[in-house]
Length: 324
Ligand SMILES: NC(=O)c1ccc[n+]([C@@H]2O[C@H](COP(=O)([O-])OP(=O)(O)OC[C@H]3O[C@@H](n4cnc5c(N)ncnc54)[C@H](O)[C@@H]3O)[C@@H](O)[C@H]2O)c1
Ligand SMILES: O=c1ccn([C@@H]2O[C@H](COP(=O)(O)OP(=O)(O)O[C@H]3O[C@H](CO)[C@H](O)[C@H](O)[C@H]3O)[C@@H](O)[C@H]2O)c(=O)[nH]1
Image (cartoon, rainbow, N blue to C red; front, top):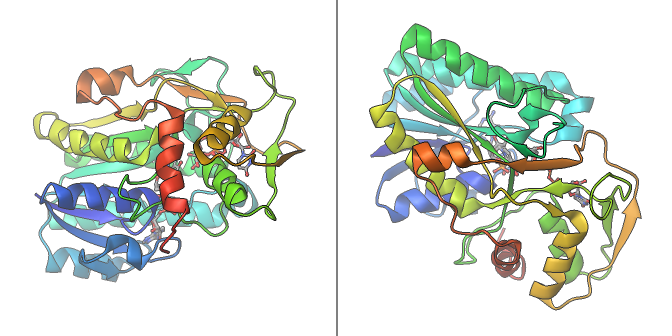
């Protein structure tokens, strides 16, 4: 297949590109390199362009014929979205609308969209399935939910086929160690834990020790990037036999506290990683754990990485020799 990967120079997108090229699909990356890295896509053709530039998108679709589009582009920092919501709605909603219009004009009718557990807000239930209420508590989550709504409307109006994948906490790195997570600033827990393991000067902050969880720190469901990539391929296969707009959670179904992640990282690295307790981070829900039963049943998706130690081990291999 010929697949356009928007945001393919980013953390999750670059793993998708590697996955697709290993299966010998033809891939073109479209990315503005705002948070992505040219080195992360290797020799794969990349158009440097912005979803906010309709002329650039039109030129892209004139130059290539695609069977499907995977859309990873977003600004995705919760705190930044609270401080600057216009930028988030502009990039994540308007940018996606531009992409959808360009696809429509070009007659491309299949899209896989990266959504997030943030659409659920701060849920009361333990394990979240797709029937849980969607009540985002920050502009980032709201921007993703708006796109989900646009996709449902586009299915009815234009026959767009889409699969929305609501990832929980993406983590880990390709087992090769060639690509991995590299954000500046880095806000995600596992890379920050590993940075602290590598550099004794960087003290890890644990945001909040007074949540109503087993050790007082937040619980998250960590899902490996390679497993996210395999789910996207399953989504493409699913769309071949199903029209309409569909959505699925992607997680491991197991929650780990921040302290448990630090404990696992100590085991993997052999470093007694130091941390200090800090105040809660604004907008952090206490517990987010996915039920991925729907993805399992309908997409036939089963994650290969189910243990947090194995996920951290793959990230550690990358962090020890980060190439970009
Ligand atoms: N990392 C996670 O844990 C997580 C969890 C849930 C959902 N998501 C979603 O998954 C997707 C990928 O996340 P990531 O962690 O790889 O982020 P990332 O920032 O590493 O990757 C995003 C990529 O999109 C590009 N981009 C952003 N805006 C663009 C625009 N207007 N035009 C062109 N390119 C643009 C960036 O340069 C970058 O390469 C995002 O949509 C994010 O919201 C991520
Ligand atoms: O240095 C750090 C970094 C994080 N944390 C804590 O670790 C947990 C996980 O934080 P991450 O930043 O790694 O992940 P989030 O759960 O905040 O965010 C992820 O899940 C969200 C859905 O809720 C969004 O999709 C977002 O894009 C995605 O990165 C949180 O309790 C956070 O407070 C720390 O204690 N110290």
